[in-house]
Amino acid sequence: VQLQASGGGLVQPGGSLRLSCAASGFTLDDYAIGWLRQAPGKEREEVSCISRRDGSTYHADSVKGRFTISRDNAENTVYLQMNSLKPEDTAVYYCAADPTCGWPYDYWGQGTQVTVSS
Image: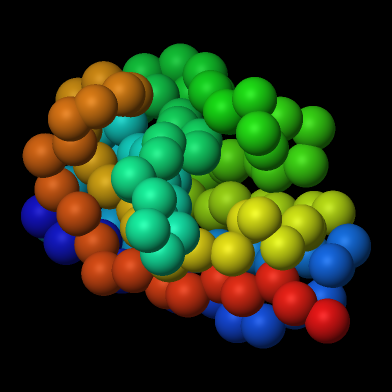
């Protein structure tokens, strides 16, 4: 099981980014995929998750209405579209896999840095 996160970068407040999580060694029917983030000095936070069977989604209150998680089964990739970004969204973002959404996650990808600053 491998997860490859990408798409982070520097963006101004109010801007958008799309993160990608490419999965290998399994299909998205096997595992739920979550996006989690960790800001300096803060605990890791689950941001969004998409379930393995029906594709139902979860978004934390802090990102609801701004972030959208989706998946492309043909590409075996999960996306996190982030709009209306705020400085407090600055963090290292990780994708992770588990049979169900929610802590703990069994498998983790490397992080991708998202910095929201003017």
